[in-house]
Length: 191
Image (cartoon, rainbow, N blue to C red; front, side, top):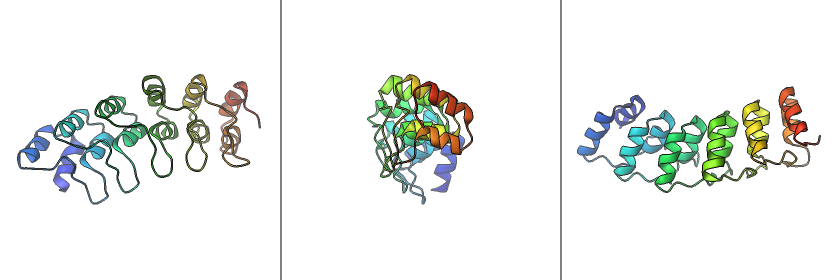
């Protein structure tokens, strides 16, 4: 089984096709719970993603962290793979902690993916995690100014609170991201 996941990581389509010719299940899972599809999405292997989908890989299968392939593709910024997965029925819902693909992309600073999810798929800009964090809050905390600006342009509310004291401004300020504090305030954020 390790050989399958090594072939996926290396983008060796011929080897993966060979595994299928020997009866490999497209939904094979590694010991860490990642499916072949999740592994291919993580590595940005679009051709292998296609091959897995054609051979019956399920887009909604989750790993041990309750993540789907589309979440992992968003975290890695692989828009082509997001498009493939969405065409095969993937959804933008979150995991058991409420982290959606948009939240994953914003947290990781994948600004092109943030814009892609918002403009192409209509991701909910102010969706919150179970802890009350929005994509804007996490992008602010992590110092991703371009993502913050993209989220604000898409209508993200800079005044949503996660609990009584956590706002995008406060998270950015604590992390030392003064440029983001200024951008948020310019967009109407309050302390």
